[in-house]
Amino acid sequence: MKRILPLLLCFAALGAQALDLSKLPKLRVGVEGAYPPFSTIAPDGTLQGFDIDIANALCTEMKARCTLVQQEFDGLIPSLQSRKFDLIVASMAITPERLKVVAFTDKYYNSANKLIAKIGSPIDGTPERFKGLRIGVQRTTINDRYVSAKFTTATIVRYASQDEVYLDLAAGRIDATMVDGIAGDVGFLKTPAGKGFGFVGPDYRDPEYFGAGAGIALRKGDTELRDRLNAAIKAIRANGTYQKLASKYFNYDIYGQ
Image (cartoon, rainbow, N blue to C red; front, top):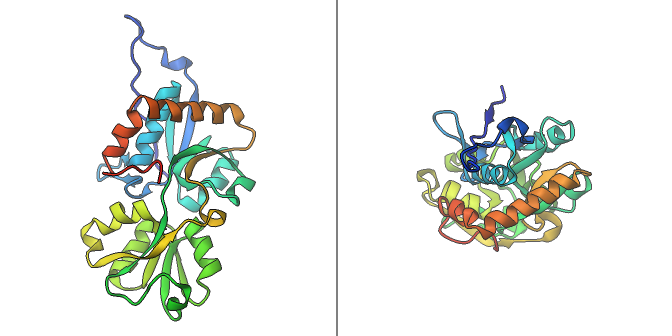
């Protein structure tokens, strides 16, 4: 059963009179919950991570009342189109393929995609090295699309979440995975499960597949909401909120990479 968790928003009082929350716009935000450190479920059942914090901050900046709606990644765009929610904050890359069906805000971070394999593995990032090997990807992601097009000699194993990919990689059931470099670093390599693994090969940045950074997806035609979100992204970048949130998870700049 999908978890629907309200965002806890704090609004400053105007003089002695608090804002009337009943008059604020309501938005439903699609999130994943299985992509650390961007989105994950804590032991107490709450959603946590950089994407979650960004969603909170943008809703606060827009003075909107928001509800988080958890959804597996491959169902996010269909659920947006069926109006299950109004926007997606889930580290979704702004790609030409996705722009055919949804609109995006400006980016809120950007990073290269990378391969992870055992340290000392003969895998060097070239497709030829994958003949007879198994590479795991999260299905319907940019990594799935790229590997399917370029690594044609490999056996491609698709998973519902990147967490499931990491489990099979650590257990030796697959030989490598392609993943966002930041997520792979913080979400796997710097965890106990990632011991003995490392990045191999080059950075993968082909804009046809990997796009121009992660943005917030929304329905085509929702231009007013897109403009408000873009203004909110600029505002939290300018007032230091973005940097404060990012520093909770990363010790380097993720916006401009």
